[in-house]
Image 1 (spheres, rainbow, N blue to C red):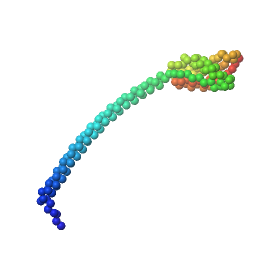
Image 2: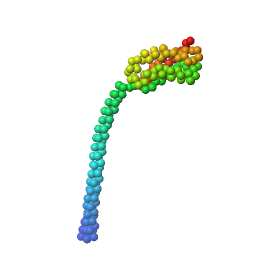
Image 3: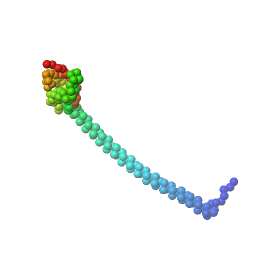
Image 4: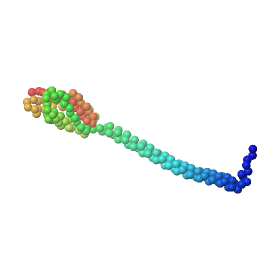
Length: 168
């Protein structure tokens, strides 16, 4: 079998040379665009790496600052609010107004605890309990109410659970 002699005809020669030149031009265009896009991607990646390094440095700085502030805040935690709950108000059939007055009375007695650091409040918790228990509330008719602290929770909010007792 023999290859036909197309290489002698000028039309086929032009076609084949066009195919070769077109292949070379397209290969050159491909290399140019691929190289150009790779350069852009490399530049973007380098910028992103620099940004990541800078952000990691900033994160480290923020972490150090937050840790320092947390350590300072742990040492300087203070009492912000005082809440009083009466456990047995239904036993004496107190209305909401009287409950509110008793709560406010106890909160006023403990108001000097606000803005004190928690450590000093914890150290004086027995004194706080005795202060509440020795307090008398005598605004209701002929009855005098005394208090017994059943629970005392000390954090930034001091929560006092109180039982009331009638005495005459």
